[in-house]
Structure formats: C-alpha cells, structure tokens
Length: 345
Ligand SMILES: Nc1nc2c(ncn2[C@@H]2O[C@H](COP(=O)(O)OP(=O)(O)OP(=O)(O)O)[C@@H](O)[C@H]2O)c(=O)[nH]1
Ligand SMILES: [Mg+2]
Image (tube, rainbow, N blue to C red; front, side):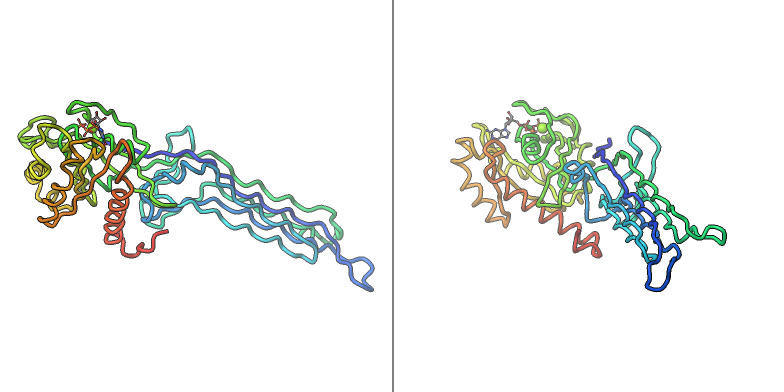
C-alpha cells in the first residue's frame, strides 16, 4: 500500500539582464569607444531535499516560486548583478516531474540532493563586446535570454510518524479528521476503517508530521479475529504510537483493561512494536460517562507511571496538548535519526 503526498507548483527563473549600449565619455577624449557592460544572470529555481522536512504540506500553501531577473549592464563595462537563486526545500525521497508528464525529471533520494527546475536566463552582452577593427562603434547590445518557466509536480511516498491504535469505535478516525485534512469514513459501528488512512498534521510555521489511522484491533486479532493485525506493519516504523481508549459506554471494562488488551495484541504482532513509546489518551471526554470516570482512570494509570491524556475530537478539548506531545516525540526521534540535521530548517 502506498500513501502519496502530492503538490503542483509553478516555477519561473529570472531573465538575464540586458547588455548595455554606451560609449566612453571622458574629458579631452573626443570619441570614446564602446563601453556597455553585460547583463547579469537571472536566478535559478532549485529544489533541494532535506531531512528536516517530512511532507509537501508547505507547497500546498504556496504555489508560485519566481526568481529575480539579472541586473542590466551599465556603462564603463559594468556588468549587471547576478540574481539570487530561489530554493524550495522538500523531504528526502521527493520525485519531480514536469506537470502532465509521467517522465521523472529528478528523484531527490539523498539529504542535500538538489535539482534546478527552472534555469535562469543568461545576461546579454554589452556593446563593448561587439567592437571590431572595422566596426568601432557598435550601437547595439544583446538582450538577456528568458528564464525557464514551467509547472512541476512533486510526489512523495509518505511514511507515518505516529500510528494510532485502539479498539474499534474509540474515535481513531475522528481524531485524524480533526488534526489533519484527511477525511476518513467515520461511523458509530466497529470496523468502519478497513484500510489505513494517513493525515498530515501541520505544526508551527514550518513543521509537519504524518499520522496513520489503522483499523481497530480486538481480542484475538493476532489469530485473525476482526480485521486481524496485518495492518500493524504500517505503524511498525513510526516514532510513537497514539493509543486511544474509550470509556464512554455503559459496558466499558475500564481503561486499564482495554489498554492491556491492545498491548497484548501488539506484543503478539511484534515485541518491537510493543516496546515503542506510546501516548495513551482517553477520547470522547465530552460524553457524561467519560467525564465521571476520568479522574479515577488517570489515578490508576499514574500509579503505574503512565501519563493519561484525555481529549474530545468533537469539542477539540485536549487536542492541542496531544499534538504538542506527538510533535515533541516525533521531532526527538528525528533528531536521533539525523544528528546533523538537529537544527532543522
Ligand atoms: N461524543 C463524541 N463522539 C465521538 C468522538 N470521537 C469519535 N466519536 C464517535 O465515535 C464513533 C466512532 O468513531 P470513529 O472515528 O469511526 O472510530 P474508529 O476508532 O475510527 O473506529 P473503527 O474504524 O471502526 O476502528 C463515531 O460515531 C464518532 O462520531 C468524540 O470525541 N466525542
Ligand atoms: Mg476508523
């Protein structure tokens, strides 16, 4: 199964500056020779891969990337200034195509890899360059060449940073729909989610991370009960698991019971998955029974040394705290993976 993030952007490199037509004017030199300087280079638009980025979310908020034109040449053989390049930072693994084409322009597979998606124009030559023995006063210069422009598409295979686990119907999909643009199916019956959903969560100005919502697990899932456990492989490489528990129903067997049940299934699937850090949270804290039971449940978990979060995907209460907690664990893990990129972008 592939989860793909996509963005389509317009890139325009700067045009080269005009060459200059000019003649030397000095005191006591009646007819100076040509001294028009060359135009400067237009800026390139460059796409660069960085481990500090994980999604293409930023590019969905800004679609146009335009580099400046080169400066025009001036008299006294002064060359126009070269324009600065514009750099677009994307995650490692981003694939670039010309919009509407299937052919790959570049596959930025390594940290720091870059590709010029629009080449800046070359500066035109000034008239000083065109003087010859027979043509001592050229009255022309070259214009700069145009910078390239095109629409490109960027594509990235997403890897989940946070995996959401829990019994069916606890509100996993509702949570992901609240914190991201993902719109998975939500319903008040078990096994609504049949395939994993991924959502990109925006964090602060420049950061984002990916949350995966997988089908609910039940007792015996490792034996094939319910939807089974095969979907757990989608969260095997996440930095952290978000474990959601629902205590809102009459027949709830208590948060600790459900917590252990799910962890038993995770352990059957793989010891590594069970060893992964977990954020444990009670959902639906807007419902009466949840509210009544919450304090006692928090005490029970706290005695075991576990911080129990709580939230409502309906009112939004507790969601910012959860997002902060997820972000801090995800970014800590990224720093461990990429010590050289610790400063981010
Ligand atoms: N009151 C209230 N209801 C919620 C909340 N979150 C989810 N629900 C409801 O709980 C039901 C189940 O929500 P889902 O998000 O589909 O649950 P899920 O965990 O994804 O379920 P599966 O995909 O079947 O495993 C739906 O009727 C939701 O509207 C909440 O915070 N408060
Ligand atoms: Mg669901």
